[in-house]
Length: 134
Image (cartoon, rainbow, N blue to C red):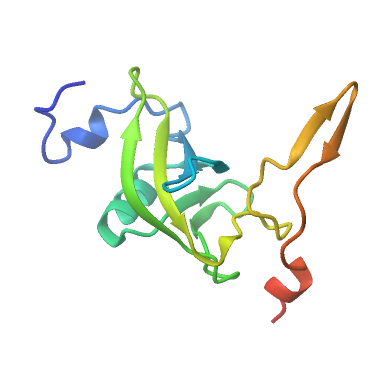
């Protein structure tokens, strides 16, 4: 990959999987904490770049997922990077509301291995019933 990738070539320079997806890691731009992992397709990445808000591809819903569309916890994207192989994206984001996880926690990575069991080490900041109440 070079700095010469222009136009739609920036999308073509990435290595998409057989389903047209690429893994995307959302990292808090200020603290450096990894908040979540999701997949993007070409359309979601283009929409993210166009709007400045994180848009992913929801494999379970089989549609674009505009982060925060239901919860109000939008992710404002300040930078998009790719790794040396062009097969993973890293989004530097500002997490609105301080909650990235649907469980009401700051990060989706809240389980920590303790011996031979996983324990939740981060607190629930807001009850998911209050986040997703309609």
